[in-house]
Amino acid sequence: MALSKLINRGTEESATAKRLELWDALARYIHDRGGFVTSVPGARIIRIEVREGSELPIRLAERGFKLNFVGTETRLGGIAETIEVDIIEIALGK
Image (cartoon, rainbow, N blue to C red; front, side, top):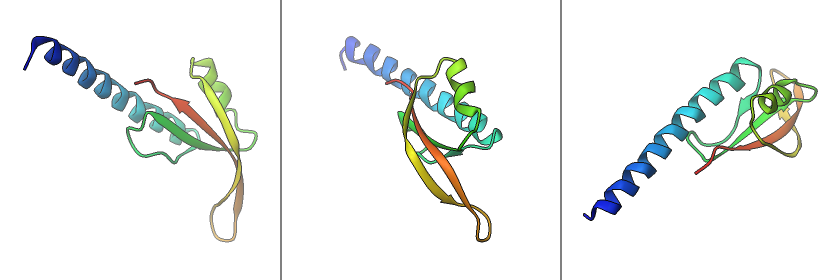
């Protein structure tokens, strides 16, 4: 394999590993603060759901994440409970 391909491959693998690490840390942060992560683990776009009025989106924006508001949905909670949630997407890079 050509050296340039090895270098690029290492860079891509490194970027993927960093994205996976960021995805895991971000998912824990969101979950610990009452949010729901609904995207596939390791996805480049992480989709989250937060209760309406949650300060979590503000906290994420303060930490430099660019948030894309997708909409509002109703989520089933406990027994006979419904929760209004905001759906937000965050791009994690390449």
